[in-house]
Length: 328
Image 1: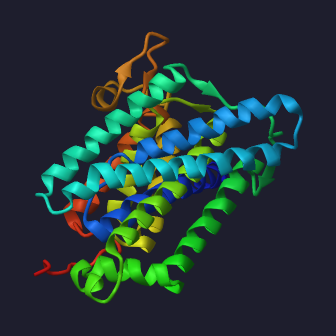
Image 2: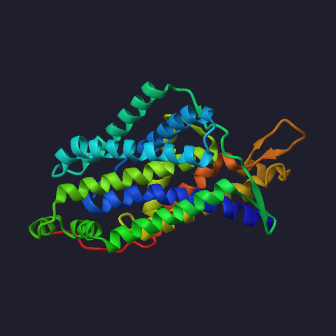
Image 3: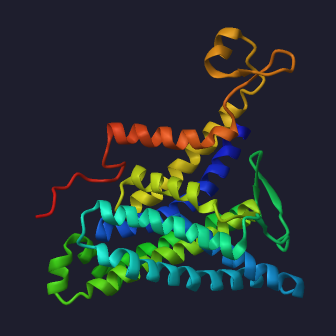
């Protein structure tokens, strides 16, 4: 039970981050039917900018919370600027093009952002300055740190704030109208370009927050960190139902829990298998005493995408997605 609770806590922390990143994918897709594969690189830029600012301010002895908040405050406008720029010059000219063209453009933008980050911050891994004192609390035999608590609380607040924005404000109404039918929304006085640009900006702001949380949680950041994170967040969005905001939240949390439980429990099988017939199926022989190494935490990415494949096979629209007819 202790192992189960521990992996659930780890999975909830990771899943909450996936959910925040997945919201950027699902918002853009819900409005313009575009998969923004550059979103993971925006997360990376947010983490790198925040790390740079925090590294500059850390030696001055300012309160750790204030330093981190300043880093986030600098990362958000930087990522929003990237989001606005990408939308204006890479996606808007291709809005009426065949769907393959914006998809290729998105992949190209992802590669460009990644290499720009490499030129600015180099290939080296950036370490998070040790300005936050880590404290561990024991809950029913499972350990949870103050960083994990902060990540969970921030993610809940971010997702609740986004839900209020989408369902309780004029901008949110315009976004939902544009997602339903852009042409009719334009005839009703909605500025489509402004709404789409705002969507990219909001998604980029969420990416910046997620980037800082990921960097703080793992303590490192690198120019390639957005690739696998972006793919997993996209998988979470598809799992919950691409274009569905509650679905992105649910998909992210479920993906994190599945990943943590799979890595935790299957990782515990290490060195337990001593039978050749099972080893031949699941493991490689280790030189020490006939032990066998099974799938462990190094294969945690496998579990996430296996679940995604199963969901796509049995429910292509996602867990909360609905089957809708093609637009006229």
